[in-house]
Amino acid sequence: MINLNTYKHINNQQSSYNNPNFNGVTEELGKKFTKTQQEVIAEFLKDPKSNWIAGDLPTSWKNKLIDKNEEEISKIIKDVFMLFRSAIKHLKPYNAKKGTLEYNQNRANLESSRLKEVSRFLTKGLRHFGILSDTNSVNLKKLKVTGKYINRGYVLKEKGINPSLERLFIKKFKKINPLSIESNTNGQYSEIAHGIYLNKNIKNEHIARFYWGDTKVGYMVTKYETPPKHISPIVKFKTSYKNEKEFANDLLNQTGIKLEDVKSSGTPIGEYKNGEFYPAPKEITILGYLQTIFKDKGLYHYDLHNLNALIGTTKDNKPIVKITDIGGIAKI
Image 1 (cartoon, rainbow, N blue to C red):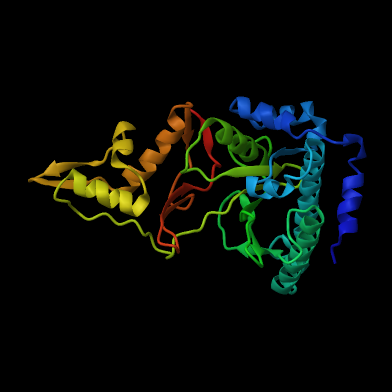
Image 2: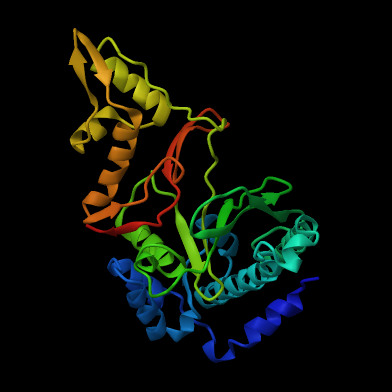
């Protein structure tokens, strides 16, 4: 059973970092795009007060602290980071390798029990810090995710009366060879650093919001984006349209993207044949447009595909086009 004493023990181990300022490494990572994992680690080493954590809490979470002064808020943010560190560590024993005794014996029940324990632990902690009301709770749920660099994916949701905390997606990384080239664009160090850089330098609604990451435990937190209401792709262009304007209306209705923005980015949109407009394949138009988001900063997403972006309609029938995975971004 996990309890707040576990959190307090870990927190007390950081006694040499009283009232840490988490903006040190965060600000530095936001100033420039780090090309290598070594560069990221070097920035953390310059800021021992960060305790290997970079980023910030969601605004909706910090809004609960408006009655606190700046020093108190800084302390609470640090405490929340340590709270989550304890919680994610508690899940670790059931991220076991296939074939091990632990994996084979009641793995589903064991992991389910840990998720419930962590949910109760986070609920108690967030209530203690004034971020969560006494009437509400938070629930951590494991998601079905696949990927070369992700070990587990979770969503954290508030439950209760008038929930107002933003839902979070927690990505637990697999360990990769730190000497490999892929560690420069994927994994806990690079993706946390690149998430911070994108937040500060590319203000675009089509990139999922990054919040914070813990390189010591190996996870990062972003805004949870509601996936399309069906498993199959939602966006389906007609073979042809009467004219470009008709296609522009369909594109806007299905994705929320304006055709003039796509055209101004230089992305192919289609062509006229026999008096009708034939759109380019949606993969070329939509994913091509999303790539141009990075172009102005001299970046390219080398792993951008339909599994790393949500393209479709939410359960609320609202169009969504959102890049949810930033692993694979590099300088051109």
